[in-house]
Amino acid sequence: MRCLPDLRREVPHRYRVAFERHRSSGSGSLEAHSPLTALSGGRAFERLVTTVAALDAANPPLDATVLWVALHGYASLASGVPAFPWPDRQDMLTTLMNRAVPGTQL
Image 1 (cartoon, helix red, strand yellow):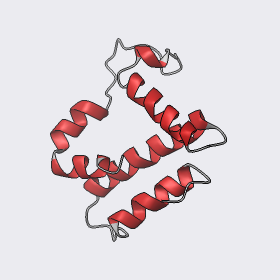
Image 2: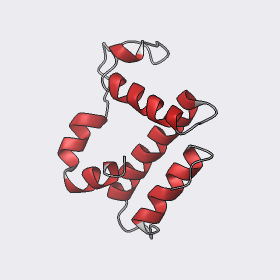
Image 3: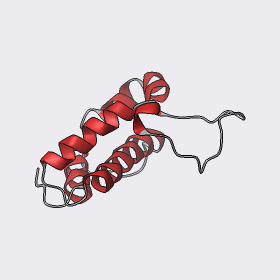
């Protein structure tokens, strides 16, 4: 997980292809839900939930979702707004993990 922001910064085109989603006009409703296994990256997210559960998280699906959103948000913002006075990268990632998955201390 810690390499995600680095990937976004070092190879932005590959990151966009792998992680960013763009809806086409025929892609269905925003409210429609699909099983994780039917979604691109669904298996990877299931692994994240399993990993978070192994950390004794109170609500692994919720905590994994918060972590996923936080890491992708940080990766996108850090590369998109490089002039912002970002905290130390390692401190930022450690804090995101510790706050997204309560009870963990990295």
